[in-house]
Length: 322
Image 1 (cartoon, rainbow, N blue to C red):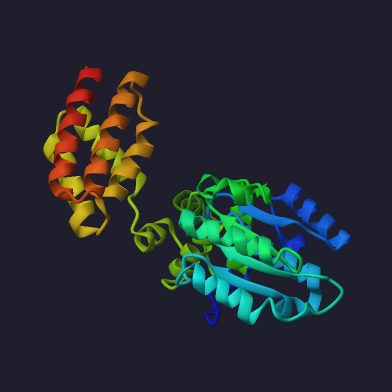
Image 2: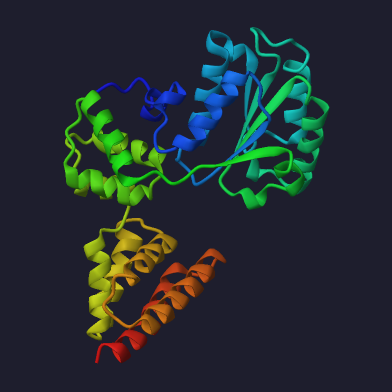
């Protein structure tokens, strides 16, 4: 197995034609390349759906071999502040002319929604000052965290979640190319745990491959995730009134498996929708799960809060399972 590169970098799409599941966006970007002109762009969508990969593929197709000389990549969460971003653009980028026949350079600013409103206001001013010779491509997970004055100055392209078949097909291609044995069941588990985030899925595949053949057991171990059957057993114990068994399962996850209280609650939340109980019961359970997740995030003891949560859930489930 080749390990000299992270697979997410090794298999990052190089051209727009390599981007999958975002056909409308690719068509729009190809039209901009034909016109050799573009507005500021805002790429928004869930993590791991190809926003940054698409931005880089776009500039490669636009500039060809000169793309590195015409593109400045910045990450808003990594930079020390808007002053650093301003300095890099003004001192190291804006003073030189673009190379080639494209009359502008491009700044790719990842994770723009990590910036404060004040920093975004300053960024808007930077975009205005250098509008003649610089275009911006901003990426974000949550467009509602981008101030309206920036959104109004950009064309917003919304990336859709990747379909399951595309994620598994890509994982299978990588596994075959890296000569890694992986079962279909393991691929299903990787997809489920990654939540459609291709970047996370590829990282999980690579980490799991270090143990040899990739099986569901290995994937769960590497991910530090709860197995669905373990979550189901907790609900079964609660419905039978066996609080001690449910409690022991939770404590094993918490202390033996090293799974956080919030992660345990998340998996219980997902399993709630599969329970064969009335919707009214599910609503009450979800409300309880949300309440205790908040308490844990606020710093309360995970063990105490999880035990209290189980007690309340058992009372509700016993009423509906009689």
